[in-house]
Image 1 (cartoon, rainbow, N blue to C red):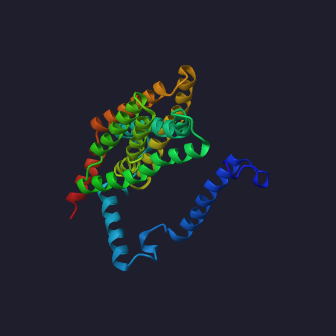
Image 2: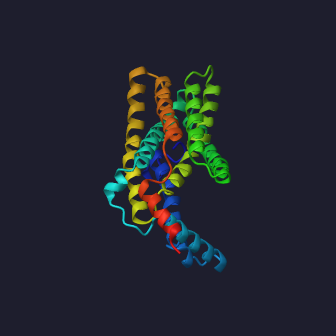
Image 3: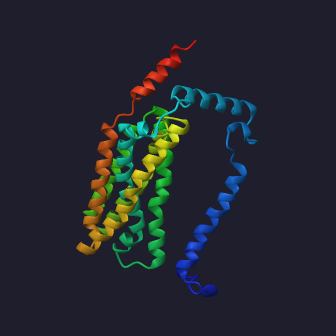
Length: 275
């Protein structure tokens, strides 16, 4: 934004959008070329890997009733769907609210140039990549999703609330980095849990409904942070607002039911009884 401003008649922010968008476009084309619809079609897998993946996916579909017909109304009446939608909606208030406003939050910590703000704002999301690897590996090793979800959102709430009351800008920024370390780590845990309920058309409907409902959190987050910021003149109460939504997400993660619904129990029992 600083050094590219004015090149070829484009503003610095326009160059930033271009440089951010071009790699994503190129990787999208690469993905279309490399990724396949089914493991059996992947040239970069060995025959043993293809057979193992296909048989494992088939067993999972059979266990979860992937070949059964589930009316949309039955999917919409599943309390787990609404629990996950509310959980992720609250989490998105924090994710979108924090990181869309992060440059302004960082800039409010001191007299910083745009370049300094840019580099400092990059650290929390980068730490989020590290946190995703560490937490996901722990979740896979233990087989637990709920407690890990509650942990990452609970730690995010504590860190961002602490940032609001930090006695110095350095400590406030360090706590924002801690928030970034944990808050992004919840995404793979969440979608692993959501996709484990059902497969096939019912699974697609489940994920679509959860995502549609939860995205309201993505709208509320940045909007509410802006309103609170304008009303108070600082980000302290705005950060506490984000923390409150993350606390709600933590509570939902702890108390929500993830066991199979009655119709899934019947399907699984029938499958086990089959010769």
